[in-house]
Length: 196
Image (cartoon, rainbow, N blue to C red; front, side):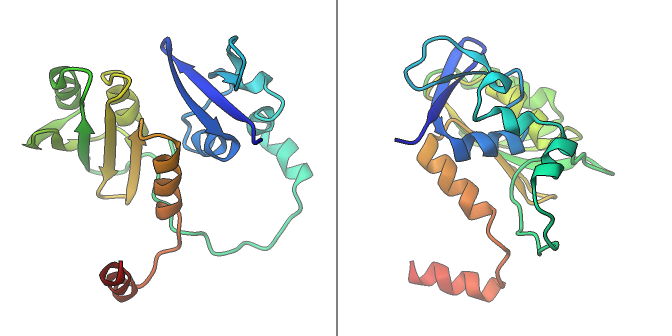
């Protein structure tokens, strides 16, 4: 059976997540070397850097480069996701935020959204936000206002990025795969939608 981990954040436990998901969290700067993780069946949480399978994620770049063979650069697929080192430049970025609050009041979440920049609520649990913060900063701030069964999806309309939280492993994997595929011609996408 494939290995899985749970993650403890602020006293709340999330998961289980497989290795591919944990690698994705690391790539999005959502899993740090000090993040508290436990393997399936373990009760004691420990830093992710101390887990034998996760430790290579936090190795120094030079050490990783020595182990990996050098291959010619391939065309990079279109990425729809957040990278903390990608800072917005110029004017504020425009975000669309959609939440599904089932266990907590929407008031706390809305107050946090309005504290991040100019915002407007256009639906029962949907906002547009203009902010100089990165998508990761916004997601991390808003996650603090969510309960165990609440979800959030954030789109950076200017930079073609998305961030989400608490959708579960299957949905998380499907969204990640969908937004990391190479960009297709718009006409192809329309035909695919009609067939579905």
